[in-house]
Image 1 (tube, one colour):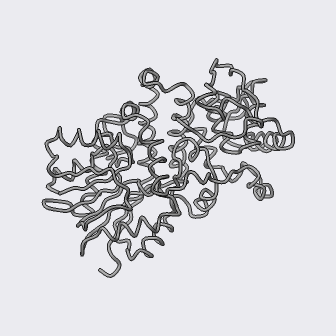
Image 2 (cartoon, helix red, strand yellow):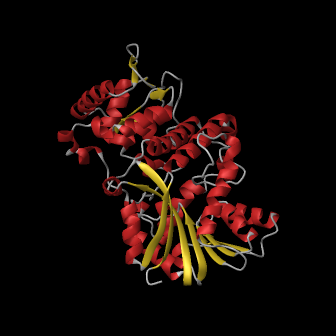
Length: 425
């Protein structure tokens, strides 16, 4: 996995952590190196964070003493390194510190949920004006141009089909499920994914003879489900590995005559369809291209057609702050990605000549979905290691899943199923 690299003259090698975790500097250069200490920024991070952590419902353990406080436990194995990284790089440093093994938790999602729920208290208001000092601009190389989008999708979705199979259920569905009841066990996940897919297909009235366009194939489960209803499906993806496995699954189901899997950018979609479905694809489009995306959705509609969109959303001001910032997620997990706000979806849909007919949010179901994925991922550590993914990657992936779960549990994120039609119909 390739990540962006800060200057090697501005960092020092990190020693092994107490856990014995040694970071491969060739694969993870920015994790293997600690930023050179900037006394003022490190001291500010130490002062602000220690004061904030002492007030939160957390137990915090430092290398030099017993834990204090009440709540889930956050243990800083290397406090100096932790504060140095946060002082230099803010939330990117926070994530890289976890990847390096410099801090741990007894319940990672619980600790992150506390932090997410009290994010406004971590930095006092007067210091929030200094936020640009701790943030980085998004790299120009992550723009979702036709070439850039392929590169960004490749970095996440082409990691390995086998990797995703270690924590997804047998439907290989990588988006929020809709459960019958919460909490739910692993055994309920496949049915919950089918419930989610069926809701989307019902929204667009997919059935015998429906011409359906899917933007974002995944590993093919929605296309399979639509084709089994009798729909004629065209499905688009930029992931070569997903396309290959989706085609195999479709052939094995005997539905190849009803499903056309295309390695194709949404901007190059052709034809008119009775139904268009796009599940958690908008987050990979990038704000710069949302108007293009919604125009492509509209242009794909036949008269009287319907669009079902499943999208993760966040608060509008939070989205604006994130859009201007290179985050730990954009650096390591979803390059070029940005979660829209509900307002941004509505504004761009309206500008493209579409209107929202119905809108259902169910963020608690995504928290449950992510919880089950993370548990499964941890249970299959040996399999992940055997696939060639080292401890640093595994800590990164666990943090990504827990960080996302915390966002939904703290209600800083939501997920929505949105039905749209042409505005004049």
